[in-house]
Image (tube, rainbow, N blue to C red):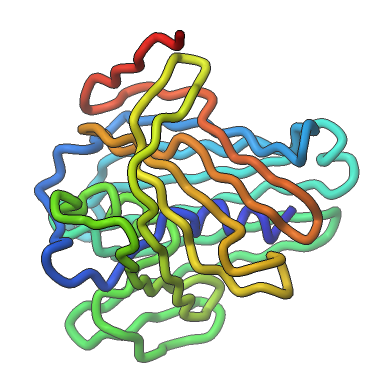
Amino acid sequence: MRKILIFLFLFNQIIIISQPYKILPNTFFSEGETLNFQIRYGFIIGGDVQLLVNRLIIENKSLIHVKGTAVTIGLADKLFRVNDVYESYFDKETSLPFLAIQNVKEGRTYKYLNEVRFNRQNNTIISTKSGEHKVKENILDMMSVFYYIRRLDFSNIKEGDVFKLLTYFSDNEFPLEMRYRGKEYLDTKWGKISCLKFAPIVEPGRVFKSKDDMLIWYTDDANRIPIKITMEMLIGHVTVELTGFSGLKNPIIFEKME
């Protein structure tokens, strides 16, 4: 379950973008947005995830605060309990993080708490677990990168384009590549909606069977929220699907299914 939750929060991370994939002014999300997801192993419901956006001031900095919670439910909770909280405080103009918090409680005994501060002047981070480290410029944490991708200019994107990302998580840098797979309509409980489809290039062997075993769909609209993720993993087929939303900055329009 832990590996699935890690990939859930990593699913939307496309970073180190060169032109023409520049960052746009933030017209995509605002304070009060809430997104809810459900994790399924085949037909078994395994857990719930919520992403919540707020705004606050820390050390005289006006920041966006995103809180992500992931919990197991039902049988999965009895077998291996997960209660994880991931927080990011990032600049409202650049979406680059100032502070990231990881608070993990898994199983009956495992706990992991770490706070990471980002210094943009000298490209370092300070971790409460491991101290100061030199990092690459514009590195993101695992939550801020989700909102960064929503602001990217995809007006010139072409099918087959590959993007690179770099994020800091659990005191390690995590590189990942994602390939654009074109547009596709998805059926949801609200109706059909046009989506941008991406395929992260994953490492086969430990979690996935092959490098193309993960797919992600984002709404191709003014909100650009994730709708669905599918993963063909060694433990079986996993689906992460949007189950609810509120406080969106822009209207979301679903077409009636025939």
